[in-house]
Image (cartoon, rainbow over all chains, first blue to last red):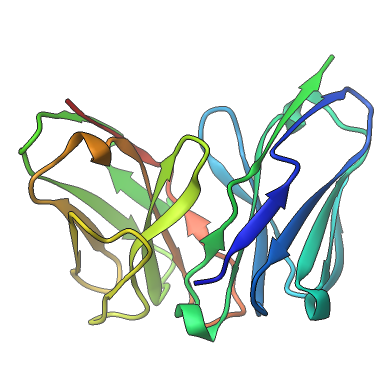
Length: 110
Length: 113
């Protein structure tokens, strides 16, 4: 199946700081999504972004499909941004079932 | 506006016991999935059903069986629970093929002692 590598594995930010999370894929994907898992375990869709750039509030994502990676930008971080960020991808070879990375654990401190 | 509903939310089993996790979605999605999440491992696919009447193994299917009961419901069964199956289980659904967002249930916390 598709191998997904996320970096960094852990991140601590002071409130207001910016950061970039990265996701690399071992194969081409035509479905790529970013998720946020809050401290209560709930998985929330952030972006469906197989290519291009999207923005949602203080978050934006860019996928360079030809180079098999995606970036998630967190700007002006808030304590509510804390949690684990996952990227996941799929293609026809995986039956369109999403393969997940191990996540980036983010803590934003006041 | 329920989305994906899983039951039970919490369960403690003894080794060797059996149980079924239930999942239902009300979004008329074709595809449904069962994942497990262990610390530091991300989410790993157990089984999926691309459409009603079909099921396929994922990355970690051993020790599990599934049933796609109808378009709405996709259950996961542990026939003889083992401590290694202690995990958080997530059901998910989406429309078939690549262009659609996946939606997750709230998770089922299972402990096998």
